[in-house]
Length: 460
Image 1: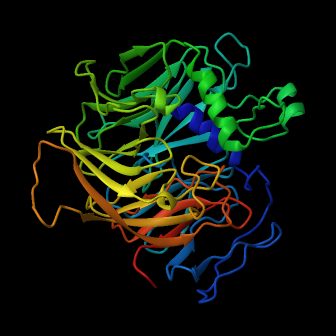
Image 2: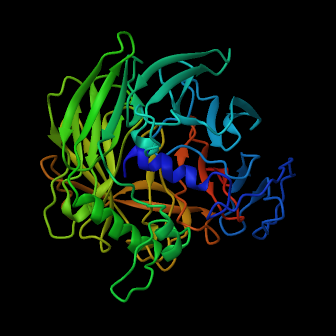
């Protein structure tokens, strides 16, 4: 999914509720309770602080405003010192103090589209989309010009740093010299909102009809829409913006669907991106240099219906991690590619442990997954949990034979952190580790409206 589509997907949920059931609810503090709350009615306030009775882990609600969300799972939302986290709601961009969980409004209003924080300075970047196209027509938001701003979290000083004629800004490099963006010229939205769509499907996301003329489930409809987009050639570019000169440089062109463009967190010249579409039909994960050289495929499929995707860098920039299934919906791995050597490391997870997204803590050893519902690719009967994963070696005890020339195979020992049984997975939790890796931050609608929560990795 492209970042422009992701931003649109996020905005659909701003205002709260699975289908934007917005309510004006306050959220004062609530004392820690040893008994977990029942899912709250829409007229009630979601709990502030409790212990999950099924896992024994403490959960804290970070957001006050219904409809608040954290960033997409591979986008950086933390200051370099690890003391602040940024969140987005209809009210604006919020700064969360990770010691006290106190919230401060950083940028007021719904028009500021939160992008990410930088790794070289205490800046938060956001964009403002022009109300109309350059020719005066309405146009889609992804096709309109955008102005990029940076705001210092301490001084609150704001400065304009770039402008783009169309597309989206997806990332900033490690030393803060280049922005990374992507654009598709003339691409139709994945989730159309025409009057005809509303008559046929209501407000459901990824609406599509099956062969019998009846609406498909969310997951199946999403597959239909993604296939339609994949099979439509549209000119697309990945580009950089030099923050000193303003120069826009195209580093990769394609007529296929490009997405997930992201800079390495440590190498200022290394970019990763993906070929979007049905995962069993694409060689998805690629890297390229900022001068357009070094185009490299990271994973090659070896069987029919093998899929790999939702790729992300390790915090030290040495590994690329991704969801691997050999084949789709049957055998599940958290797979790693060591950038310097090309070495492969596959860590097995069970069917119920498959997750929409995985992530890794700064130590490179502690992983997490946000689970999934039975309609998704794993068809897990008991998959609605937020998990912590810790690698375990599974070498043959009899021979102790091991070679770096072959794929290293390990397994993940799992621990359930959060009962997500009340969560509707049409909203992606998008979990991230806090820099001290004591908490995992995620978005959930488990109490009827969207809020951002943090679960403590250590048991309470």
